[in-house]
Length: 162
Image 1 (cartoon, helix red, strand yellow):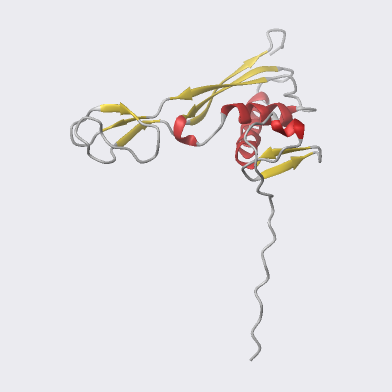
Image 2 (cartoon, one colour):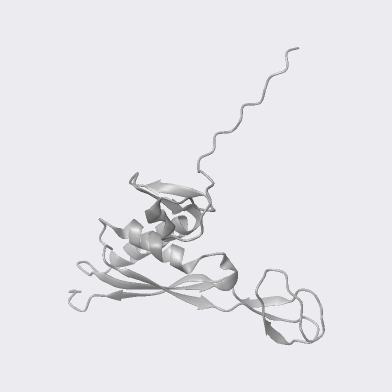
């Protein structure tokens, strides 16, 4: 019986290596999976897919406001959500070009991660998904805030007619 060689799976996205969205303009690589948009620039996959979903939600809401123009979209993002605000804003600007949302701004409110100890009930800030109560040193607890990702408001142009 002849042994078959397993085919190497094709990568859908390139893994690259820089840290700042401004580096895109310089052609420097990124440290995360990215996607080409309109064949011109590379955008981070995670933030870009979140922005695409956000655009769909905003466009769905706009259906009830014909002729309205979006000025600002506001979202809340928890610190533990693994979203880089400047990267998400960059992706927003790139994704809304040549759409009905062109010229709109994405404003991101960061939400501090806070947990409550299950033993002593102390509330404390956390910076990672693994945490320990600073009062009684019990590992873990209830995460009260820090994983949010929500659309909080859409500001429309004052001259829009409803």
